Length: 554
Image (cartoon, rainbow, N blue to C red; front, side, top):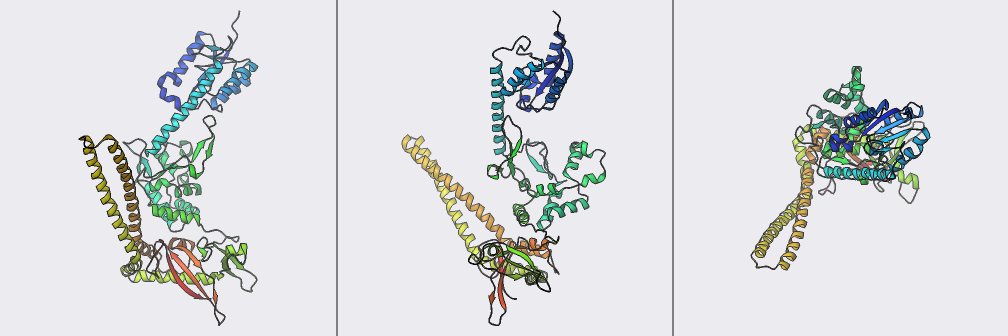
């Protein structure tokens, strides 16, 4: 009987999870086995199809699809793999191809190592083998996830590339260190954002200053992205995008943290990536040295959250996100009265506008009135800084120092008390062990008392940690006067207000309801909350912002 003519596809696959098994299933090993089998059995090799780095549960592999296209066109009528698992690890799809597709297309399939051949008839164990292969994939996926989770919890950073500003540690695997050659770019971006620049403006600045992009730097360092940068014009090196800048400004990597599980596969079978809710993210702090301080990072996040908005006439509303109703806390609505002969703009309570009388009141204030007042106050403070910086810092610290100093002393005393008790418990526990070891204490009493002391030790250690954290935060506040003075000093003698200036110096502006005076004029209280500083008009402080309270006659 004549041997049928078979145009044979040698199919090879290796996933990343298989690489741990060494050369036994490497692509080269598979190729050697398949070529020898084809030669020994007089099978004409039409082509080799290799999917390196692809999971067997995914049948959208590029070379698998190319092979199936050749089968559809009649170029291939025989498929040979080392074993069933190289063809795939999803039992339903395996049954579909072996029981329906291949018989319909008159395609012979051979799994060499398992001696399975559709021409001779597949064994009854094939469905079980396919199911076992799928279980293996599921178990491997679980083990990989557990391994990665352990690495993440240990502070390791598993990634192909180091983010801009960092490089991989030369000696410690999965560790980042600051790259002094590129970290200045990150500091430049955050400095621009800190002083009110939005992502679009930062992008233009980086491009104008010819600061290289992360992709270009990777290409120079590692040769990656050669298809993009090789032979590209010079301007491609500085072609920053808004999306890149936004991503950097929101990345906690730069304050020393690593965020895991932002995305995940739908399942071990379906590799499509889906975004996970923030509540399911895994945040590991202190995985690398910070480039940006946490305080500056949070300040930039506030800037992003209250980003100024463009009006319909393409002008920028510079107070956007800053002006709020003093009574209900809602933002103030910006509008323009065009009914007058000379149109004018104003703010009013958004909550009142939506829900009407009974919920809040209008809190109406004209834009030009607010503008003039805020500009005057900023001019006043910049003038004070220029006159005598040291004197101003002393006065602010004195103003802020009363209640804060009392609170600091209270926390220091509490910390000292807890540390003393912790030392006492440690001594008692050591004495308890000596009594048990010498036989002066029974096993029952030792177990009972040691559990009690261990629980108290743990509680005391947590109290010490909490108290030290609070004291660190308090010390940070103690430096707020100097920080604020240095910040406002950068904007000496402002002649006009800009969104950048306002967002840099002011936390929020509270507008109270105006009071109508007997002479028909309106008196209105406006509070300016400056960045960093405490309450300038009182001896107590409740937050890290300050209220400058004044009365306006409008």
